[in-house]
Amino acid sequence: MSFSEWARLEPRQGHIDEEAVKRFLEIFECLEQHKMEPSVSIHHFVHPAWFDAKGGWTKEANIQLFVNFAVEAFKRFGQHARLWSSFNEPTALAVGGYIAGNFPPGKMFHFSMAGQVLLNLLKAHCQAYNAIKALPNSSGTKFGLTHAMWQFRTAGEGLLYLPAKWACGWATYCMGWDVVHDWMLTGRFEWRVPLRGVVHTWQYKGGKPPMDWWGIQYYSRPQVNWAMQPCCPKGEIMSLMPYASDPPGLYQCIQRSSAYGIPVYVTETGFPTFDHDHMQTVLDRYLKEILRAISDGLDCRGYYIWTLVDNFEWAEGYTKPFGMYAWRPDGSKDRELKEGAKILIRYNELLPDSYENVKAIARGAALKQKPTYADMLEKAAATTGSGRHRD
Image (cartoon, rainbow, N blue to C red; front, side, top):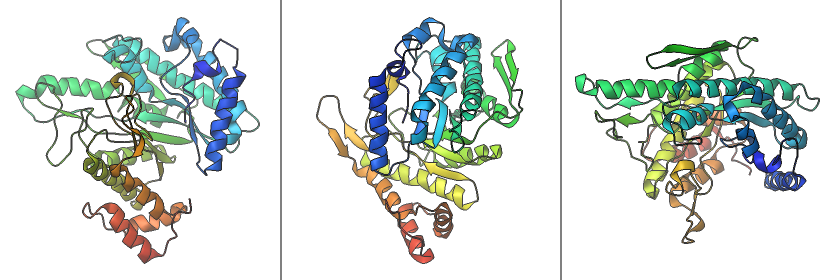
C-alpha cells in the first residue's frame, strides 16, 4: 500500500487530517483481518500542492518537509507494517517529469534538473531512513527503496541503428541502470548529461546508503527498431504499453541486485493485455524466473504483481489493463477475476509459508515452460513433502 495521498494526510503544511488517519487505520485493520502483510511506500509519485509550490523535489531545502511527514506517518502507522520504503521509482519520477515530459511538471529534455531531482530524492531516502530508525519503536522495521530497472535495446546492429543505439543508451542511463547501481554499491552519486558531461556529484557520508531491503520494479527490456519504434523479439509477446515480455531480464535484475547484500523483493511486475492466455503465459514465465533465482541461492524474498485491479495508469489513463481483476470506467466490468490471473492463485496455493521450503520446492521443480511452471511446482511439492500455503 502507499501513502501517495500525502496531500490527504497533510493537506496543509504541518496540519494532519485526523479523518484521513482514521481511514488509513481502517485499511490496515482490514489487511490484518485478512492475514495480508502490507509493504508501505511513503511516496508514490505524488505530493501536496503546497509542497510543489515551494519547488517540490527541485529544491534540496524541501527534503526536511518530506522527512517530517515520513516520521509522522511512521509514528501513526509504524506498528501496522514491517516493510517500509521511502520512494516508489525515484528515477521514473525524475525522468518522467523533466526528460520525457509524461509526468508533472511535464518538462522535456531538462537533463540537469532531472539529475538534481533524483539526487534530492536519494538524499531524502537517507535522511528519512535515519530519522525513522532513530525512533524508539522502529527496531523491527525494515526500510528500503524500490527502483524501476529498465534496459533499452535495439533490434539490430550497424550504421542504420546508430541513432537508436545512442538513444537507448541514454534512456538506460537516465533510468538509473548504472547511476543507482553504483550509488547502492558505494554511496557515490554521479549524473551526466549529453554533451556536457558530469553536472552533479554526491557522496553519502556513511559510505553505502542505508538500506534494509531492495525493491525491483521490472516489466521488460524494451526493444526498438532502427526508427526507434517498439518491436517484439521473436518468441516473446507484445503488451499494450507497448513493450514485450522478457522473463530472462527479471532474473538478470535479481542477480544484479543481489550484489547489495540485502534481501530483494520483486515489488512490481505485470503484463497489460486483454488476452488471458498471454497474461497467464507471461506471469507464469516471470514467476519461473523468480523461483529459478531462489533455487540458485539468490535472496529474493517475495513478489508483488502490478496490480490487483485495473487502475488509472498515470499518463496512460484507463487504457492499460494491468489488474488481476478487470474493471472498466464505463461499468462494463466491475472487479471480475481474469482467467489469466488464476495462475497466481495456483502459485499462492502451492507455495509454503516457509522461505526454506520455497527454496526446496524451487530446486525440485523442472525449469520448463510447458506445461506451466505451476504444474512442475505441484509435482515438486509432492516430492519434497513441503506444506501447502495456509492462507
